[in-house]
Image (cartoon, rainbow, N blue to C red; front, side, top):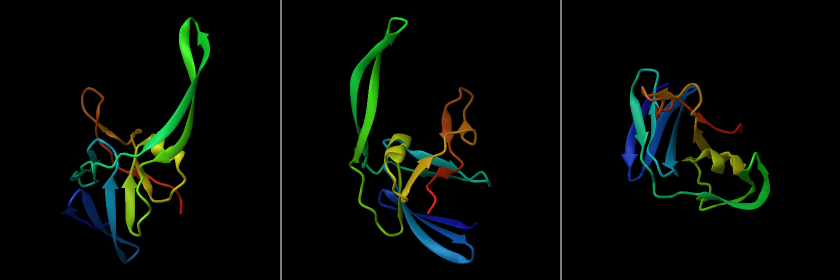
Length: 134
């Protein structure tokens, strides 16, 4: 895979070679945090927040306490604040937004076992994104 990155305002254009085709995609970080990706050659790319932060509406009601600890039942609703789909654009979102939507243009950082962590266990980079099958 060949990657060449060009900063474009708060978006990043990602040019990659895949099966002989060159595709240009725009990745927009729709989280409030910088997202850093570490590539196999140990290079890094950080996607700065775009200022667009979609959220999921939630409702809750009180539930029976467990061992005297108060509990609530929370139900997730619609996603709001998510940009409309754009050809050639992927939106990096939180896991909560990703799970509440069925859109194929969403990416979520994979914070599982492939994540790069510091000596305190905090994530400093991810090595891939999770996306839906198209």
